Length: 328
Image 1 (tube, rainbow, N blue to C red):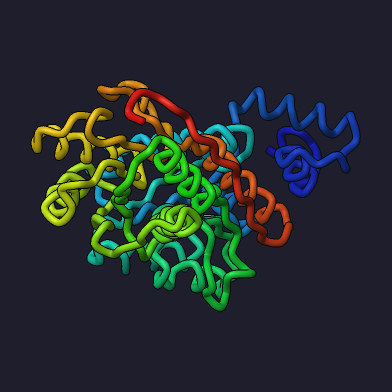
Image 2: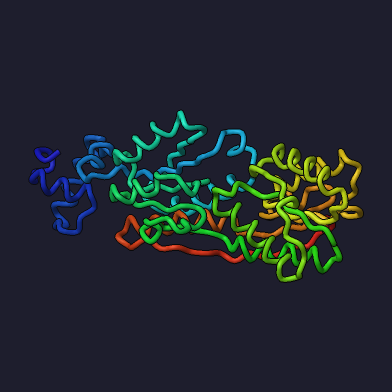
């Protein structure tokens, strides 16, 4: 290339990499040589030389059945992809379906095979965010990092889960429900714990009993919610209001209530959380707390790009709102 264009190899490199420190004549000569030789830059070699991969990893700690079955993940990934589409970075999906996957994924990330990492479904005791920070690898997680010692060094995007859950339960109280239960998400994840806190706050503010027996354990899955609600109805056959901590779990709640001969909303009023496409299509259409799912993914991508550009990690909390439909 240098011989064909009659300039130095350094000048060729500057032209190929878009540098402005090249004369018009030299640039024209190199571009003519590129056209004649049909040259295409070796992206891998350029990335190695620059100590970057031009990729961003999205690591999801969920089984494939949930990743591809829960609309929350589809919406979040759409938001991430939309933000990264205008950058030089390619998105790589890494799945941590169980503990057997974890070591290999962590090894891949900590070796610096990607320039930055986005984490979904992070548990509170997960050491990976702290290890990424210690290795100098930019990362952003979905959900706030809580009180972990490295929290200030971790970027995050969260929704107002406490406030959204509180509004959902306050709506059931205003509607006249007397015995209000909840189907909680995993309590080792920020959204699950925070939505349970919102339920407790709403009942406490209304001077209603906040009993552990009114909490049905869930795992953010439809089947897990249905199993939890079956047990809940055995403990509290008088329940007349339920807040499910996700729309998918609200669908499982509907399954269990129908199987028990309970009408929604006639016998039991039901509120979910997400306002995914499941909510409007449910029978009856689901009252739910809307969190901006795609915006959450888009913000995660934007904060990571900011870090890759040299900015310090920071957190963003997005607003939620109650959407009233026929289920409550």
